[in-house]
Length: 312
Image 1 (cartoon, rainbow, N blue to C red):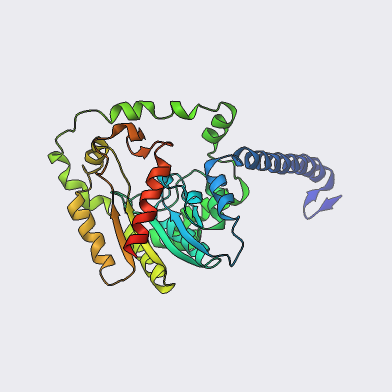
Image 2: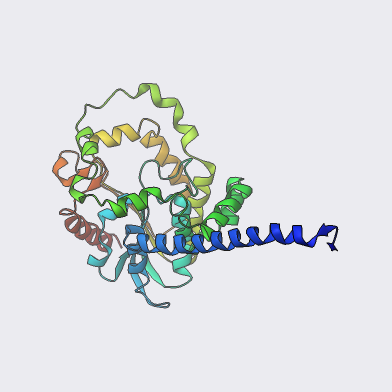
């Protein structure tokens, strides 16, 4: 018997294995997604997420801390009605989308945001890791338009939506073989003591690093905070002297901050706290070249909270 030009026996012999394979694939994918979500449950990014969502919609937040890993130097739960909502590798675009999400949900008095060398650069956008996490916050379509990579971000959206475990190999490895936190980045701490090199050969790379996309999202954060009457605190976090000079190879500090100050100039309720060089002579306060030790973070948190109170 023919069905649309196919022999039904032949059609059945082909469609049955394909159907079985598809069902098995869907089942395995479903199980892997569930398992990976369980793996990530104890991760830092999910922990900070849960901490934030202890605030119900409409609850007031006094201090909202955003930004990349330098922001971990502040303990949100130590501040009065504060929460640290930062994450590893969080670029300026992701901070903007997080801030937009929060302000649509909760009133906020102060936002504390990284203002470090290199925060507004060519790395703006989503990388490969933890794409599933950013589904709740990031507008993939809008970000793709800003970067001129709509197809790429459509692909990233599909991967995040249906294959959350993709590119999560390191997360799984760290879950199966956890490391002692005291052993992390020890080599980096040793590198922090190396002699500062001559950086004259790097002067020409500044313009390539301060990206138009980064400036766009930095401006969007300023405008959003201003529109909601939120006080914005831009914090230059402490780093070691070696790290400061390494990063300033491609970011002349004076030129970098001069360009960002032109964005800030028209707005009020913005304070800049500069602690970049404050602890150059106190290497014992760093767990690596650019992150504070767990022991010093409570002290640093108190220092920043008191300065914010005195500034406003």
